[in-house]
Image (cartoon, rainbow, N blue to C red):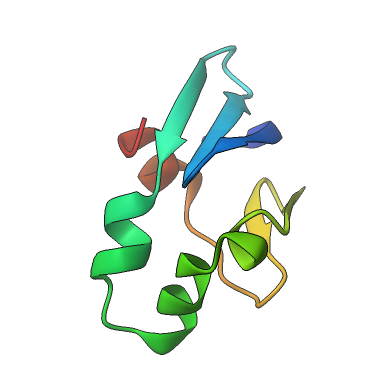
Length: 77
């Protein structure tokens, strides 16, 4: 099982993530937040809200409750 151990905002909709297997990459969420039809995900199109996240439960969790599986996040890198 893949875990995220650290994450840092870079710019726009990009987050630098570190996985527990040592992989470091930059995940670009622009297509997700602008293309997803679910209102809770679309809220992340506000950069103020997008920047408001933390690493919790082995993944990135935003203040509005949105989270994605680490495997999905790796796929955005």
